Every structure is written in C-alpha cells, then in structure tokens.
Image 1 (cartoon, rainbow, N blue to C red):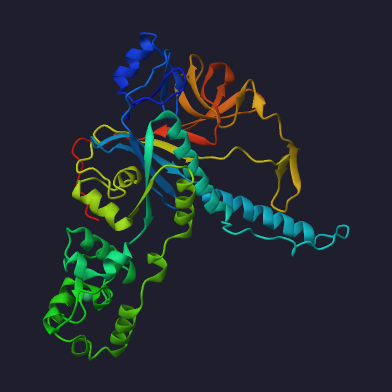
Image 2: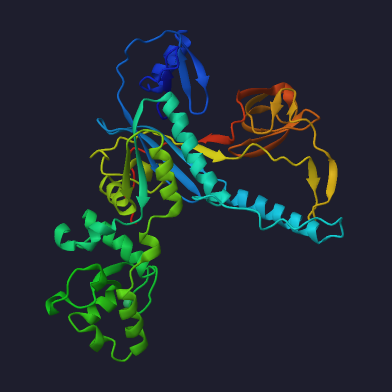
Length: 441
Ligand SMILES: [Zn+2]
C-alpha cells in the first residue's frame, strides 16, 4: 500500500508513514482519520518545528489520464501514486448536447428574439472546456496533495521530444543506438515522424531500426534529417547503397522519402498547448517546476526496469529522478473525475423537451449522488459489504458502484458515508509487484 499522510493537530503536513505505523497511531488513540481519499490521519498533538523530508510531486499529463507520484528524491521512495482519469469527453458530449438543444429551440416557431451571436469574445489564453477541465483536475490535485504532504517541488513532462538537444548531435555524441538518452529522444521522434512504419516498404508492427538515408560510409551525418526508420530486410538490402540507387525502381517512394526527411515534425515537437497552460498554472503555485521531455521519461523508466503505467511514468519525469526508485508495494489511488452533477431542473428528451417530473432533492436521508459510502447489508438477498460511489433515489433505495460493478437496491439504512462528494470517485489500484517485468516499448 502507499504510505499514509499525516497532519498534526494544526493541519501542518508531516512525513507520511507506513500503514502499520498509522494503524498503531489510530488504535492507540494518538490520531484520528482526517480523510479517506487520499488516506490522511490527524494527530491529536501539535508538533513544534517538525523535521520533514521534502517530497517532489511528479506529473505525467495525458489526454485521458494523468499520472501523479510523490517521490522522495533523497531516498528514491515513491511515497504516493495516483492515476487521475479526466472527463474531457463527457464535457464535450454535454456541451454538444446543449448546443443541439439550443439550436433546435432557435429553429422552432417561437417569439422573435434579436440575434445575439456576434457579441461574444474569447479572452486570451482561452481553452476549450474539455481541455480546461483537464488542467483544473491536475491543479486541484497538486493543491490537495500539498495540503497533506510536505511538497517542495514539482516535475512536469512538458514536451514529447527535446529538440534543442537533438539539433546538435555533435554535442550529444553520435550515439543514435538504443540505450542512451539521446537515442531515446531520437527514436521516439523518428517513430512519430515516420508514422511507426518502415520508410522503404511501409511495414508496420515490426521492430524498426534507425537507418541513415545517406550511409555514414558515404559521408552521411547523424543529423535528424538524415535518419529514418527501416525494417531489418530493407536495412540489410540497402546497405551502403545510395538511396537513389536503392529506390531507382520506385521513384514515387523515393520522392516521398526525400520530402518527408526534410520536413520538420512541427506539431509533435512543439509544446502541446494544454501542457503549456498547465505549466503556467503550476508555476503560479509558487513551487519550483522542473520540466522534462517524453524521451527522458521513457529513458528513465526503461533504465530503472519499470512497467509502463501512468503513475510509473510520472515517477520517472525529469532529470531529478533518483537512480533507484522504490516502488515495491505501492498501489496507486485511481481517481476518476465525475463532476458535481448537472443543473437540469428536469430531464429532457432528444429534442430538448421536458420529459420527466422535476428532479427531486439533491440529498436523500443525508446522502447525495457521488458520496463514497460503505454499506454493510445484514439481511435480504444483497447480504454483504459494499463500498463505492452511491447513486441516490428519493425512495431511499440506493445503487452503489463498486470496483466489481454496480449493486442496485441498497437501503440507506445500511450505508455509512466515508467520503463526501468532491467531484471525484475513488478506487485503489493493484499494488506493484516485487519484480516488475521489463517492458519492450
Ligand atoms: Zn521495409
């Protein structure tokens, strides 16, 4: 299990402790549970001048999910890990639905309304709501973690490739082989640029080798514009030949290859807008922000023999990554952004016409949809213990979404709230095995 966050009675963040220690503090009455997600306990005493080990919050932002990790740089211990699932698609769907309903309403025969479509402005730095929500999710979690753990620095993966470093292969040495950081950056870049296929025959899903378009023996350089990817048969067949000789019978392939080699990979190399916005928001938090590239993350992860998951990627972001990362037994907190419900007064049908009674009260018997609850059902067909996100009904018969699936018809009498709705739902992921398997790519 991940470590447990500890606060003193003044809500000052102390060093996280291992679960047995936390259990002892709780059973001996020295502490109480402060929060379930992430699990935090609060001591009943104040600690003057506590000795805390600073932690680094590492972030690997993704479009669907973001990896978060708290790493002690001095010891290499991953103290806490989480995978944050975003709701960009849900937001887009809701806005598309709203747009369709409004458009439908405008087309219907209703009283005349002045057109009002050219009176809106987008401020500078506007982002689509789906992207803005991703950034807001991450900033929220950085701030939440900061409240319970002594975080003194942030690392964020900003770019896919470190282009300035690649532009000067002479400085980095001409080691384009696997196994060096430079090699990783170059390989990732080439895979993206050549669409993960052999530049000569278009073969996919096979191991590809880095290939010099103009062979080194003929004076070819290791500049990125002279490199492409080839499958082993093509690479061997071409050998030292000039590319024009090799592709003499396929002029169209030659033409495409030469054009593609010269073209820089603008989109992928440029900083992704969302990540850049995130970087600015993180810098505004007042902590030092370290930036890393995707190639560096992968290099760090593979050299430390770790699997590819969001939270392990996050642990490997940036130059500051310790030589040895202790991840044994860490189970990530799976966080899913769920929002806070919608503002519909009642449900509407596909053309936006009210089709139900007004929605009931938001709270029933002290519960609201989205609360995390634990239900101990002692009688009836649903006997058992369930914990998860609750969906309320006015009748008092609730549904609970557990890790195994949804359980219907649980009476409110059996439910105890463990964490009130805060816009996210939670589950605990599988703990990390002792001997991680080496991942290929
Ligand atoms: Zn090929």
